[in-house]
Length: 396
Figure 1 (cartoon, rainbow, N blue to C red):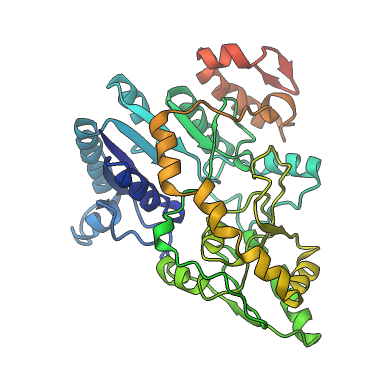
Figure 2 (tube, rainbow, N blue to C red):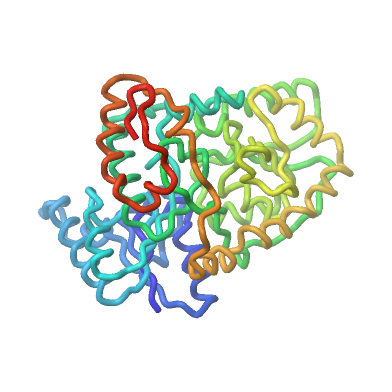
């Protein structure tokens, strides 16, 4: 068996899955279109297409060469690989390679990463229902980030994929049942240090300051400093992942994302290192988080109070710090995650928001949704799980 993994290395997830599959004795082939962030380590990726194109010099047509290389790698992967795992996108922008892979009898697994399928207006509607703080973006409605791009990718994935891994925070347009996505962690990379200082070292390391709520974190930090509360604080920006892991192991408290309801990979990495973690998390949100999830829930409104409590309560910090590594080993170890893919476990999550609750912002949005719903209407899962009918301009 050989597994292909690509095409965008979001949060170094491809690296982690590769390590998990290698522990299982499975051979892999990896390719990325470009390095999505300078802080992500892509040195062990087999094919970095952006770097391959740059080797041709400035005279080459970048888009044409990219297409040529992608088609070459697609053909090579079809010859060599049995399972295809995609992060963020597939080989072709229109996802027509999914049909090709299916015709060749390949198993297709898609790991949803976030904004490639998240439609913020729908997300906002659901978050308002739960009284969650709405995600803040600096440029969400940028060119190309449209509901059409989300639906085209999502519906093609729902039509062709054998397994889909996702989370409710990005599945507001979803129709098909999916597997619960637990972020994969290569635990061997993490040095656990759950000892706590009396005067704690605190870090906040946002990949996107707007989405992570950095403005509110800094307001809380400034307020605590004015009160002469003793702590050391560092705001980390654009720190490479390998360096960040070492910093986490020498940190007492990490403040993660304030607008999240599940938390991301950074929170899991800090837990694995023995940090006390403050981040947005809602344990009753579709039961995505286990009861023992050892993260302190914070919002823009509560970050000051909760951070002050953690700074001053040394004994509580010592107790919480010991809980992180066991939790990560149980739920997020890459070996556990990859075994689930191999075992082809059935889906646990059955989305209903799009079918039953989402109100389209306009006639155009409803029309676009109806057009892409047509793609999956012939699927057996659709006929079994989606009740036919009309609602608020939608046709099912």
